[in-house]
Length: 323
Ligand SMILES: Nc1ncnc2c1ncn2[C@@H]1O[C@H](COP(=O)(O)OP(=O)(O)OP(=O)(O)O)[C@@H](O)[C@H]1O
Ligand SMILES: [Mg+2]
Image 1 (cartoon, rainbow, N blue to C red):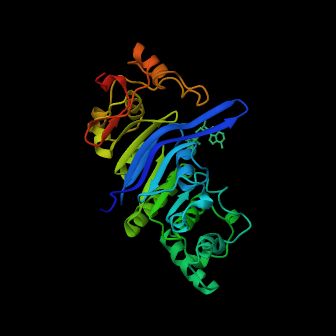
Image 2: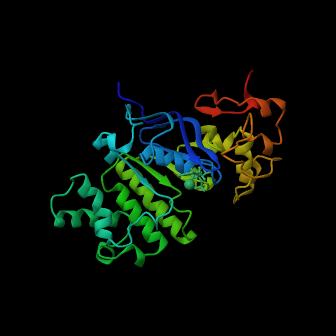
Image 3: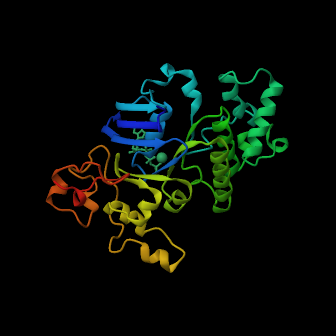
């Protein structure tokens, strides 16, 4: 039987040893992405979103746990991953400026993965393919093929990163905050390009953002991360209609809305307080307990498990556990 999930992350940990102690950036998370869907990964700064993406794409091997792609184990270091799978998973990095070689022209930047994976046999063929890719992200090739990243604006650089990520015709792309560094006027253009590409290529993706309204437009499922853990996961609409975790409610109560109806749907009585703790010395029990208005004794002592409270809706919170 064909696997329903393109990506499965099982009990993934990524720890970084530092002079100040071990940073538990990702600390035992599990999630699955269904073929053809987008999973939004949301959380405050430092919650481990980028690290999750970096481990999936193979930038660092996991400290522990497994990553399955199309049913195959890809938890090994990048150089030992099957080559066809390397081509099949791509990432658009959080900082477009530093991920593009400033000395190269756009044709060579976007064309490099095509060369590496033997997908073009001549310079003409490469130029032709790169031109098509640039058109997809609305960068007219005649204006952009021979320019360098240093001549481009933030949105244009991000468009180049997207073109490079889709060059090898991947089936899975990780978008790491692809618009957060951009002006609002340019954000919409980039998001449209991503939506068109997702449709055209039937892409599956992991979309990292801390913008909940954007996530609502782009993803079919959402996972909320807090200090290296997943605290809630659900289909996007369920998530907005019935957020369960106090942290999720806190995030949602600070989203600006347009209509009175939407305002009424927003969780009440939970304000954003405090700051995210340290991933070196995370709080005991539930990592959110120091900021949680509903915390009780058990929350300080025992870590809540992520449990399925209704079909496809998971939450890790003692308020909803039956123990
Ligand atoms: N290479 C590294 N070495 C040491 N610590 C790291 C490394 N990479 C990430 N971290 C730490 O791991 C934690 C999670 O970082 P990560 O970049 O994954 O967070 P994030 O959710 O993407 O945050 P942001 O929204 O700011 O991008 C942070 O405390 C960060 O400082
Ligand atoms: Mg990040």
